[in-house]
Length: 638
Image (tube, rainbow, N blue to C red; front, side):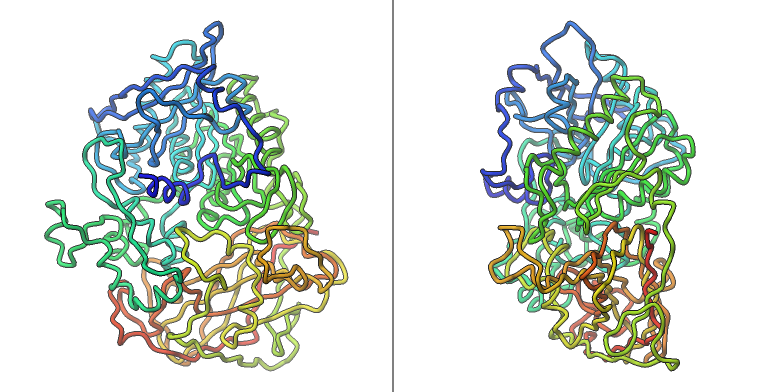
């Protein structure tokens, strides 16, 4: 049980991100028990399924309180007489007086029903049909009618998967719902978490059983187990395992459900089977996406979308959620908060804010909790609830200048597009340095892929790499490097980045990875005592943004197609938004490569219909070409 708890909270940080004893802000562990009463109830949904719900109500019953709710697949425990030591989004809201509600979503932990990973939204439900939207609606309806001393106003919040459920709460929302804060919210499983632009995040494979192990009865203990890796070197482990089909053995169990026992591959994990059987962006994935339904968020629900610039798990989700609500909800109160955080770190009570080796400053998360998050919920659940909240439309952290900025739109209105060409001799410039287009070739050795990290270790889900020093990659022959001279003035990127590459390959399939790097000057000094011993901030290659495109999806995620060997081909890779100033004295660097292992799985580099079923013989080393009429389109703040 102890091992399970450690793994679960490694995967998902709800409110207790990792911290050292020196960094803790000590809270009285007995505060909740002294000031709140706890009650557990089973709320019946419209189709008869009962969802386990835990309610923490202030003991002071002399006034009315708003309700703050989190729906989660990660357990609302402790069950029974035990109480959480911290409740709500942050300690300020906990102490100001809210009714805090946690609910196990359908099919998870103590709730009835069968779980469906990213359960599809049903737009026009018939009587007794249910989805997560209706489960949320039915829950809120019960809460406002049955909890004593509530003021009739409800807010929702959550990080990661609970963030997705916060997004869901705002669709076809219950009239009592006044505020929702989706944080690191999943938007679409083909672009978040387990996939990036069609490439499978192999580094997440141990988390699959967390979502795909069948359960049809309530339980207060774990019903799933995580695959065991008998190695401390994940790069070598996955390299030795070979094709993805060889991982099927980790999802075959002795106790097979009747439906899956007949599976020809013997796969007893419904999420892994879903991934294997749906390699393309088909109706299975489309139906589970929530981004395309955000036109159904009413103007009566205020939204505050929160994310981290260095969130390895859910970067697409919060950015696209904000943009889609903004696009469709012209009269909505919709705001964006993005800071220098990895997954969920804004809920931490640490003073020192670092991501991996890179230090961004002190009290960044604490400032967000007190001055932004608390103010948001107080205004819409206790205050006037109008659009004059006193908060900016976009509250964003410049990860280069290391300071917060406020804007009345995101991206800011004074942003222009600039093209920077990938020239010969490793030059990155605003114009091609040669009237003739040149070819730059490299060998993509399938037996020697480019690692995503130089660390020798295994991780449950990768996070630190998002700010890792990229010198180790820049010095490999199969990573192309393009770099500016030393900058003579600050240069700020604000918004998305589009890599417009012209490429070729001797094979018929390839992945393409683009990384944007901030190269620090040689005289840069260490300002983070957590930096790895072998590194120096001198010439540090900070990865600002990176992304992969599985080349078969260059024209369509629905209909993949092979490359024609040796034919010059255009591919466009959208890199998610950044807000970063490359400071005077630094350099801007672009890295282009074709493997990123084992962050993503290996592309066979010969076209097969389904990479999850590829054989060893399909994997071949190829020579790739990047042409110098390729360029990077930056969104530049003027």
